[in-house]
Length: 299
Ligand SMILES: [Zn+2]
Ligand SMILES: [Zn+2]
Image 1 (cartoon, rainbow, N blue to C red):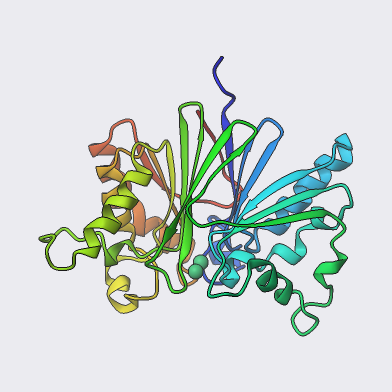
Image 2: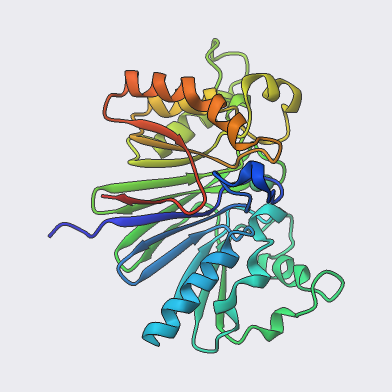
């Protein structure tokens, strides 16, 4: 029997800091948060400010059905734009919610301590102890997780300050990859492979991870010119992301983690040519900008 489609919804698409206002209405101003749902299973990638709206949406569902919520929250890393919405995630305050949080331990500071510190009274009025839900925090590096028949593989990414994790979700034949906050331009070199032996290995690992994905949600924060200025900050230029995705047979590429300085008009101009090229070279594929509120059915 064919598995149900995975429904992928973007709740926050912005990188670095939330950017509300008339210039970001189309693609959204909330920071990173994407849900992947299949039947009763709810996976959430990152807890940027977009998770607040997802929480409200889930609360309405809970109000209608009364069915306890179980949420699997997978954190790519703990930079602000990926955790700042978590204190506003309403289901965490419900006693019958099960909240499973997965993320990478960093530099000896355990994930739970990082999240708890964010809710210290110096920063936020409500302590994490006020969460009435059942919380399980699991630290992962390069792991395989099975949740109700959905397979998740995580892999560490090194080219981001402090590191980050990418995730691949497979259900039946459908494959969705979430790989934000990584600087592909730093290791996806087209030159001879002998310049730095580490680079080809990182490039091969990334390519193998995204190979033939039905949907890749990838960091494409910069233009080529911007990347020159911000090399080393841990983000990718959209053309390098597009080229890599094309070479790996990615069917749909969602450019994600939009720069806070990029208005809707700027973003439209930035990807227009890339989108045309992508469709020419991969007639059944497409490249687009991730947009807050957008839902895609995969598989
Ligand atoms: Zn980020
Ligand atoms: Zn980051």
